Length: 359
Image (cartoon, rainbow, N blue to C red; front, side, top):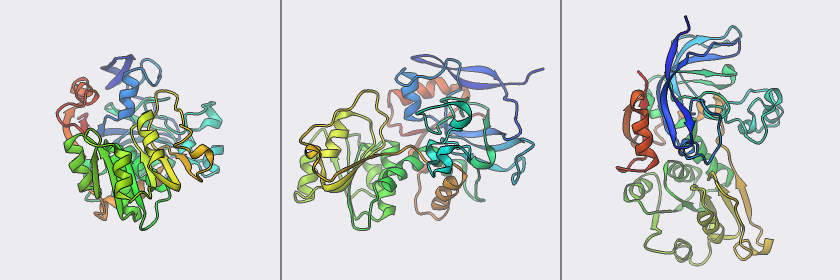
């Protein structure tokens, strides 16, 4: 008899529902993990709204914390019962992209013919983490053991938003003493703020309007927080920097307006590090781009994944250089996943991140 599990399934735009699905069979290079904690991401809301297309019937979610339930025959170096995480991006370890050093763009594309989707597989091209069990492909490249003493909630941000936010700071090549602006202080923007501080930025300016997020922004390293409902953020950034502009601007919302404001806030030679998931075509204003003569850089980042990235992020948590547990503002059981989506999609009740516990 086929064993079944509960899973959050995409039905159609506007509907992600809890349903029964078979527990996945484990291939030789795979691992089955029993999910103990997961969460909902802003990208999941893009899927819910139909702004990012996925197959009907797909299990959603890409931020797993769990326990190894079963290992494939070829998987070495792990034991059943060990606590693990896997990154939202799960590289194969041997595709062209991975061997070229672009681990985030490695979704095993040389085997599956996947193009332009990078290594984001969970809840995108294969079943994801908002379920009782998750099949992790290429397990030896992706399973990262959770250090003793760290709780699920302490490492819950590592698979995606911490890795993504930090990547915004890393790709922007923030240097010691830099001035940085971060546009939007949702979970990823907050992690970008924290990443900028860890990279050595000495003046961090963030742009937000939700009071709780503004307070969290200060807690994670912001020196100035601009309420964009009360002031023009570009004008304020220029005032704070005495007209110089910022070394690096990080765009963490995915809107034309924040992308454009990021460009306008840069110094000559500055870098715009884009983290947003954009639902529409972007345009680059001639003046903001200095007609292409400003020596500016625009760089994008996809959440780095793989076990080594996860190990490093958990080291940062274990060393108490960052505490992202306060970002978890709500907790739900998996059987209330539809309520959790309603809350998160509508950004009610001061929600930042929702912890989902299947068991």
